[in-house]
Length: 136
Image (cartoon, rainbow, N blue to C red; front, side, top):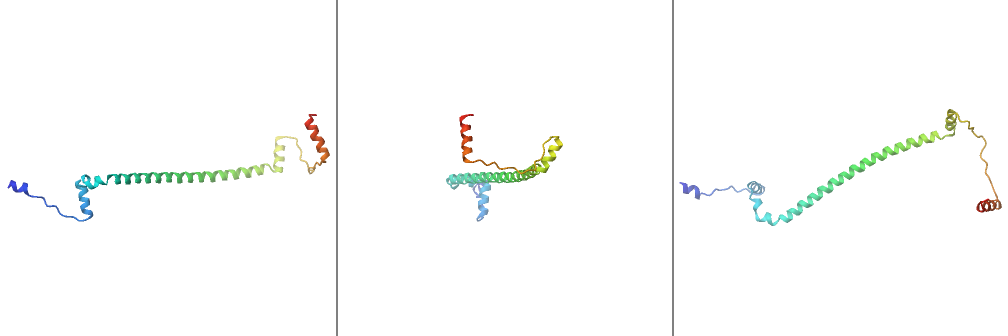
């Protein structure tokens, strides 16, 4: 009876397609096969390409996040610029400057006469230039 047990072969059920490959992986038969060893450089290349692809994806996502952050910062700075510009325009109006001068107690007065244009002839201009270059 012992001889029967030793000589008896275990019959395996034949499974087709994906099931056979799955069973081969579960048993460990596929990891020692010659085909896997033969294609190992190609599989390594595919893994390397996959890792590079993942790295580029992470880098692109980081760039997109940085661009969005910069856009929001630019919007904030632009609104701050517009606010400061409008405040400065308001503060530099002639009427506002007069109010500020009176509040500080300065005795400057507003001129109601329009500015005058100074006109000189070319001869007078040459005379002024000669005086400036001679050091007088």
